[in-house]
Length: 300
Image 1 (cartoon, rainbow, N blue to C red):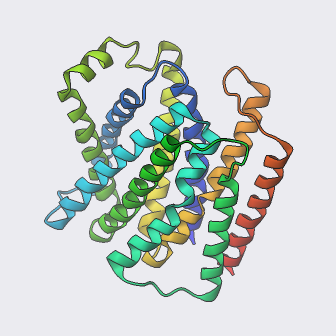
Image 2 (tube, rainbow, N blue to C red; image 1 turned 30 degrees about the horizontal axis):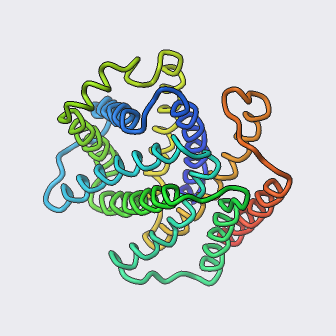
């Protein structure tokens, strides 16, 4: 199943992008300015137009494309706002832990109840449990702002998942993907209608990123762009019934992120420093075993 490989690879690159986002947001960048800059880069997708079959959407396709572009940008803003204030190893797992449930509910609302085999149901439960276990953090206080940002981002990214699938069911992959990113670009342009935002953004250093972060930003966006492409391809390939299972594989992203965070915190504490105890490491190892077992059960 190519969509499984594409999904796991996408979560690897998403973990790289999340780390880059956290490091950049630890500097002068602000969530709204950063969302705007990331959204601007979406327009680069038009460079693919000469090489693929491209056309204009029609009817209901426009609705799904516009909705996807909006919830994607708003989801990014909530994610960046959370990364700006909290540890990346807490934010990303917490946002994604509830997504499989939301996607399962939304899938039933849009396409009806999906029939799964026994091993697929068991795999979904194990992948979900693994994602929840890896996201738990007993050593940190959970604030209302953290819960609010995480919950809203989770809902928005779940809707993005569903709208993307609706688009790929109606349109060729490249045509749908390019139009989604064009709409994302157009939506962030709306930010410029706010005079205060224009003044802050254009008066900031390198668009709010800081000169030292420009290379890191480009690298981060390259990772994020590749992750989005792989995930979109997986969404297009996966049957509707497997969308929730696909998202529950996000536990792999938390595993990648946890390993990277420990590595960077140990070798480069000035760049990124997050505390990890023996109990936390043990918890993550248990979660990894559950996630890997869930994937094995699903592949049976």
